[in-house]
Image (tube, rainbow, N blue to C red; front, side, top):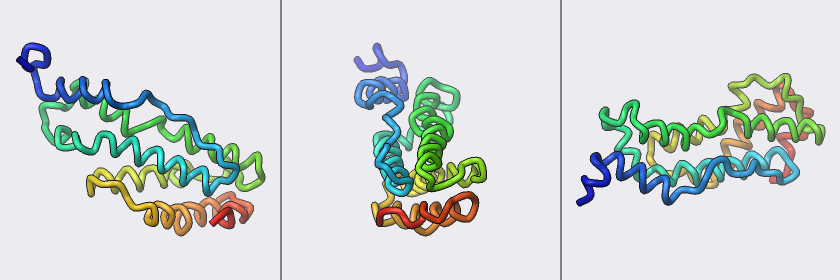
Length: 157
């Protein structure tokens, strides 16, 4: 009966994902400080990737390459190609926390890349402590090094 409506397992999975997952993109967090904005954004991204973690095994099936399911999963995991981080950094600049024009694109997208990479490898969400350490020990020091005023790494802890 299922195969009359969904000829392949990937089609059934795609239909279920479209039905159960919220629309993109979620609003970009605005907490008033770069540190807490990045933590909130990483929380959103972790939640979004957690939605699709149960179907990651489908990604390993070469038959999904180039399919609607492959496109859908790529869209859900990719997000907006750094637009949210750019918005967070622009807001931080208006507050005097940093100068985004001096921050390399790779540094700006680093937190999202690291969280997504870890989730794709381990197939589980990183702990809040791991995300906080990533922001405090890696990202904010790099931001301060490249264009921060020093306040970015000293935000709320």
